[in-house]
Amino acid sequence: MPEAISKEQSVMNYYILCSRLKDVIRTGWKDWKVRRGRVESVAEHVFGVQMLAIAMKSEYRYDVDIRKVILMLAIHEIGEAVIGDLTRFQIGADEKEKMEHEAVHRILGGLLDGEQIEALFLEFDAHETPEALFAYQCDKLECDLQCRIYDHEGCVDLREQEGNAAAGDRLVRELLRDGTSWSSMWMEFGRRTYPYDDHFRAVSEYAQNSYPF
Image 1 (cartoon, rainbow, N blue to C red):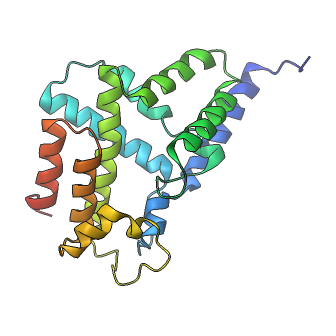
Image 2 (tube, rainbow, N blue to C red):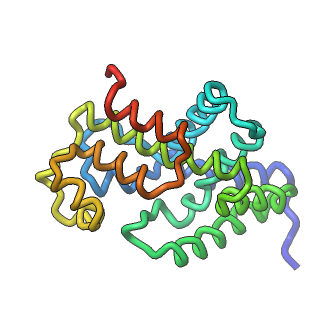
């Protein structure tokens, strides 16, 4: 029978493990060879998507429990503290889900409220409840907006993408062949791929075409 650990150790174990996300650079930015002195970590993405959720709830009056959404988003990437940030171009969805769920179960297993928190993570992953679908759209749009910022800063050279699996995707190639910029390609890819409702689509289009950077 495993030796019981103190509450203090449980807190520290969880905090130390999740703190790894401060040093995990988002794989998409590495794949596209974003050139910048400081590139976004997974932990910074978690902060960004929570702030985006607050703004979207405020301006569009979504009928969701924003406190639940914020907690959902706080934990939605914790599995990456164990498995790293794997993209759709690196691994199949089913395999990634299995790995991530096992990692989340391991991370939360040491907390007294671990089962309830894990249930919240699984709810997010299913994208079925109003809160989970809202949070999922925030998660995807935040990435699109960060891409737009990096493109505005001139951080990506499309001529230097050797070895980039994402650049070989059929839809990505199609959009880039049309002369689309990197961020416009990325944002159009998002609008075609993810279940954005009218409000998320409107923010995406505004960020791409109208925002006065």
